[in-house]
Length: 269
Image (cartoon, rainbow, N blue to C red; front, side, top):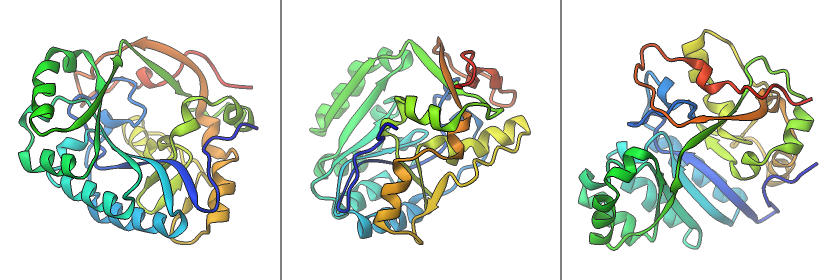
């Protein structure tokens, strides 16, 4: 069985936390189901509580990624980065963004991100590429450290809503999930899918529950977290063999075609 995330009694390699669930780009096949978000909530208090609780278990986290959705949609993003940096002064902390809002975002937020030593990680979608020069000019103005991905041409779909995959085998074959430990609303997950599939349920009328696919951050131990992160659970049943489709934007959020999320590759047996 493959080990997903290096973790020991003091050290967690990687964790993701949401700033927002919604997005301004709304890509079809988004693994966080962002186009399906009908109503978001203020994540700040939960974020602070959850990352503070993580600190009780792990003195070190190598990399912390703040994402969504689109983090720059939250005008309190500066409070997220300051709090995370105070708790984890030596961690690599990234804000993951499509970059489209950066030229218009508050200078206060950008200055705080820069002063906190946070990296802005830009996923280069076609709309982002059109204004990349303007984005980089803004980042340089505030002396921000940044990195830009390769152009996103395709999205990879792995979701299989009938839950017909063998969970143990799906876990052992997982590559995308090797680094996607996800903390959300007081619970820790192997990846974001089990936490955010509620949005797929809202749109499709399904009732996918992913039972026993998370642990309560406030009622656990470091040892239990270590065990949890290195074994499969029910959510792995919903991960099939990957298939690719050309990147596109969901044009009608009131009538979402859920087929964009479902793999053509079949279940893992």
